[in-house]
Image 1 (cartoon, rainbow, N blue to C red):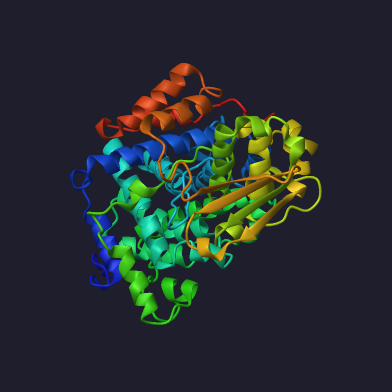
Image 2 (image 1 turned 90 degrees about the vertical axis):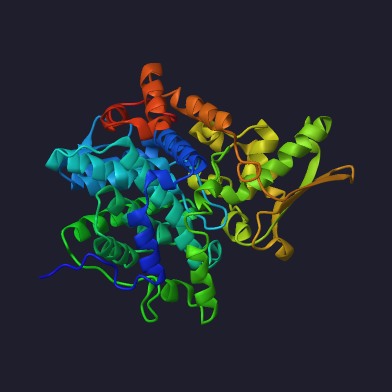
Length: 482
């Protein structure tokens, strides 16, 4: 069988993405995009350590470890090694484990939880089985490819509109980004990369009903990371996948998941490649300041601003009589659901605008320990939640704009509106992201280990090998929630 090296249709959107990824060199990537990729990588590793020993992560690790044989690939924060698909699945689950990881506002996905676990697993696999050395530059370039193309493929699916229709968006279009990133790392040909993309697309899925308390929400990006890795490894063995998968009229990725008629689908597809190589979506990937679903961050910011401006009004929360949170779609569907009963699991709490507002009002801060068993279901929180109503404000649709109104027993009220949350605009500064890393990893890692990881990531392009970084990722780490 003669294997063709080139893509099926270089003029189609699939071919354009694949050929761009295949030909990209580190010198083609501006310094600001390289720097952003390294910050996202460091933040993702920190989120992984925080998530590694959470109760639901321990359950996942036990189940997968019983199912999978030991292998060459490390688990973040564990003295355990598994096969590459199992490691990709679990490390992604750890990074997504506490709603602290990055996200893209226009095409919602969590890039670090998708790209890093698959690249780490692929790296350790080929080093163990082929004695192959992966340089820091090769790793960084593959990460940039995945982080750039994930949001772009998501834009072709309508971005946040996918969430509105109930799909877990990043779990749907994250796998294709993983497949191309791993293909880049392993130097697959354009045709092999196209096959990897096609095989990953046919595995796409993820339902947003997972947000209502299930542990599965933590793992859905992990399914995409694992599937994208497997797709690339199949293509590497010349196992053929769907060609021209993104633009196929019948059964193609965009036509099936959007249902858009022409010419709307063609317009959406044009956004995938618009400015490719000159305008960098990676720069719009946002780092979270709060361990909450991103669409409720603006609600917290509204309350925080009111507390700063009218500090005295919030000294006695018993005087609050009513709270209204106005949200557009998809934020309303994602975070505006009504809390029933007097208790929540951590997943549900982190997905609730009402819970987030109550937490900010009571504690004046939101951090991982806010969701510990001792803190999670306090009556002081649920008293405020019961007087909170989330409202769909249609004029806010397709934006992050949020308005919070707090009314008091004396008949007065305070209102604050936020157009975009902190972390999106303004983005967290480099120093704020490094501080987040130190606050999180600093509680779980020895200072020397923490510093080696930070230095390795922030100088990634200079490393002849990523071995030193990999050596620090495996091995036991502390636990955030006991």
